[in-house]
Length: 318
Image 1 (cartoon, rainbow, N blue to C red):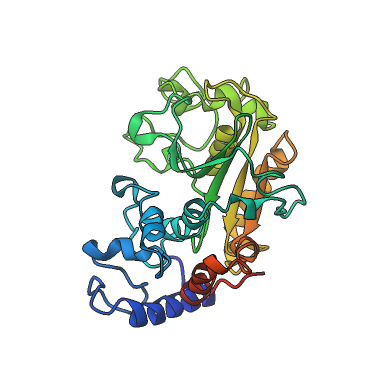
Image 2: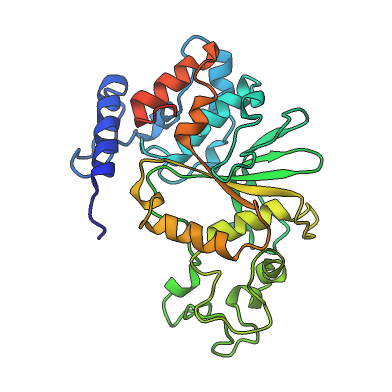
């Protein structure tokens, strides 16, 4: 079991302080030690920050993610999905995508866009052009779209890493098991078990990364950067599944305090690995929640959001 960190302890302390003030009688009754507060089922929608003075906007923000698309642990106060819905849902409900205009990613490129006109926002966007089975389809936390571009946004909070390929973690008696190497294994004909079942990742990955599909790789370069590379595919493929390296970019939003996103952290290692092999400069970009919240800090109607994110999560505008 991964040991706790001072960062995690601090976040948990803040969340319990928030819960004691705002969710008396609404928690699941679980212990306080070594876990964040979790809302009981019928109170889970209260995990989303909404304006207390505008019920119409509050309803709009709560509804941007349908109930059946909420993650299993949506009721946990440290849910990154609830944080995402609170922030991006507010920008959507108040019609303030203009606040994302000209915001810079860490690489110096636009985190979002130079002009907000013509852009729309979608939550838990399901991708259908990669040949994934319905239960395993790529779901993008937030998708910003215009007529010509897309921005696939992955939002993290206390997570300690990006998602990896699940096949090496299967039991060895599972027919889809992979030993972590991009090479023909068992009785398969394809180097990737996912290719074998019709998923089209490796049809497109060599266009975006220095990973030739026609040779073995030991270890598989896709294995540890699976989630990052899938989001890059979402951003760089047209809706009909054709690669176009000028179509958009993938953006990661993360907590700058999280040690795993700092030097020596696992998420930082995955990030550097993906960026180092990416053939398209700027396809992968990132920005902290701290920097993102700065865009709303001086907007009167979003004061509730800035204050709530600060008090609940400890995220201060940069």
